[in-house]
Amino acid sequence: MTELVVHDAAEIVVGPRDTGSGNGNDSSSNTGSDKDTGSVQTERDAALAVEDGVVVAVGGTDEVCREYPPESAERAVDATGKTVLPGFVDPHTHALFAGDRSDEFVARIEGKTYTEIMEAGGGIVVTVEAVRETGDEELVENLCAQLDVMLAHGTTTAEVKSGYGLDTETECRMLDVIRRADERHPVDLVPTFMGAHVVPEGVEGEEYVTNVVEEQIPAVAEQGVAEFCDVFCEEGVFDVEQSRRILEAGVEHGLKAKIHAEEFSRIGGAQLAAELGAVSADHLLAATAEDVNALVDAGVVPTLLPATAFSLDEPYADARRFLDAGAPVALGSDLNPSCFVHSAGFVVSLACFRMNMSPEEALLGATANAARAIDRTDGTGTLQTGAAADLTVFDVPRARYVPYNAGTNRVETVVKDGTVVVETGHSVQRDGHTGGESP
Image 1 (cartoon, rainbow, N blue to C red):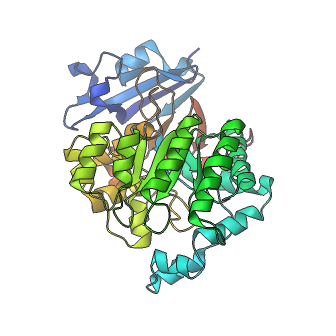
Image 2: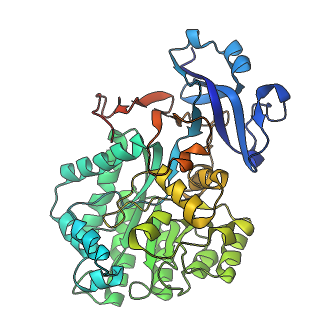
Image 3: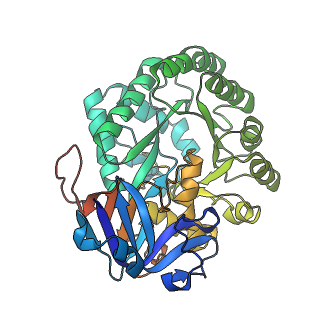
């Protein structure tokens, strides 16, 4: 039996046009396909049907509903006048943390830089201390609380990093917490090991790199939770050769490479990502044309984080340079205690307003291209037939209104694997229980 039919939508964004939808309707004049959105396939006056958690049909309402009548489905969603998007994919977060760093927010307003705050004893080390002192169950609840807000804003898949442990025991604890939250929460989580987030206090850099390579990575690999290994390749943190050692050790132990590169200064992280064939290189505010070409040639996904630039009052990455080179630009929130942004919609708005991305480019960046940045090639971030039915219904008439409504959450319904998990601003599924009002 059909699980779900979403019908009469003003617009459904299926995904990148060049991948095809699999429904044979893209060139048909009677489906209402919108031909004016560049590389994005959309359907106007549209519907989709779901069986076994998977999209089985997407196209014009009349056609889809003829084969999959809404009245015969287990659940029908009337999307009249509304827009349906794939669930947002967030490919870069530090969403698991403890403690409070709101004082740094005030310090930045007063003119302190990120580096100055770190040199004064703030920043990452404050969160490290808080995480080390917090029990596992509280950490699980902390992460689920962040995911509740992300889900309410339409995110259905998110990468989450460790990196606030900086020792083998706590890093493995963090990864296990991510695993437990993944089992408990509707949002699909992609765990990343990032023991190389910063050098802990009282330890020499080379000594800590050796610890990450010889102790932490083997323990993480044996644990079997993490999918990726990441490193903060930045001046004053981990240099290129140190980053190389860490990422190569990760790859040797079965972890795919990611890298924080060229965020505050250009030291060669993007070139290293290209050399190693990393899945993604993230931040890239200081990347040059040479770096862009190297990443494109190597097939590394550039993941840009405009909310970080917004929060830290830094220059924005040059998205146009990557797009003009043919790169599949991905967008992430970088949710962390110094970039307290949960909304993928707001990230998309910033990409349009501050990085000169079109609405279509930005929406692809937060869906299909974001999925590529976490090595998901199974249709995640799309509503193509055969893809998991992860979708969001927005109370807006066109997809471009999502970034146009900057800072306003217009999410009405969120569906995960064919099941409604957010409805009219309320979470309806977490741990098998009805949740409270979604922020």
